Image (spheres, rainbow, N blue to C red):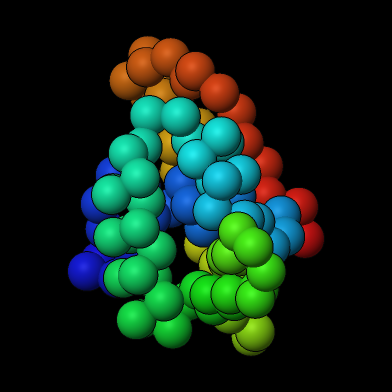
Length: 105
C-alpha cells in the first residue's frame, strides 16, 4: 500500500499504461494535480521501480515518463481488479460511478 497509496499514484499509472507520457501531457490529463504533487508522486513511483523517467536533451528539455519494463502486465491486472471491485462496491452501496475506466491488455 505504501507504493501505490495516495490520491494520484493509481491515476498516474493508469495514464502511463496507455503509453509514455510527457510531463505536460500528464498535467493536461489530470488537471486537478499541482506540478509539485505531480513531480513528487512521479519521483516516488520512479524510486519504487514502477516508472522510468527519460530526459530528452533539447531546448526546452523534454521529460517523458513510462511504466517500467516488466511492470505493465501486473499493473494492468491490478487496475482491472480494482475497477471490478469498485463496480461491485458501487452496486452494493448505491454509490454512483462518475467515470468508467477499463484498462486494455
